[in-house]
Length: 221
Image (cartoon, rainbow, N blue to C red; front, side, top):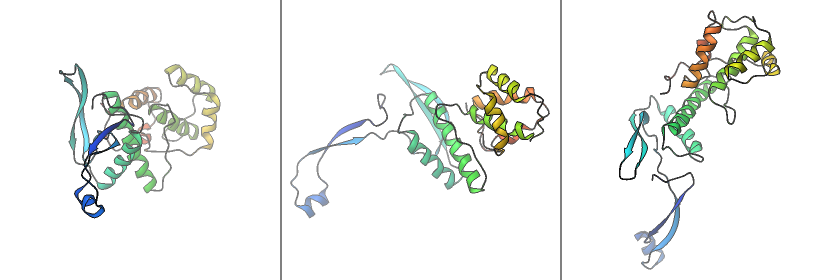
């Protein structure tokens, strides 16, 4: 379990099922087959309170989680679909793994809700943090002067300011946001999202940027 990796298979030796022995006339012998290891939680309950525990006999640590009931069947279905895609490339062994999975689950829930309401949503770009969602959603709101924003910066100056903060943005991206729809309630309240949110709110104190954040869930630990 501690050394598992995505797609890893184990060799299983077992006897034929009794039904197969009876119906197919199979002799009693052991046969071998390789099965994919499936040791991630099945998410029948929602994971919570992540922490690392020491495995003294192995001289390493592994994540441990409590669980709570899901708020609805729809939440479970969305989270399970997210997990099935996520675990093709990762295993849940560290707090960093949990942060990745938790963000993916939150995004899946937000997208499912917005699509059910017939609203526009945003997807995370490959290799980008969830804060990139807030950056892109903010650019659209700024370009349209929504949520109490006014264009006090030129598009070039805004792009430079965001880039200097550590969120690379070019002028053409800022300018093209004017032709894109404003998307509300699409950003999960993760740690990296809230770090950018505080900088944006500090620079534009009169804006109602809460409208860009999802009203579901809490900031990830």
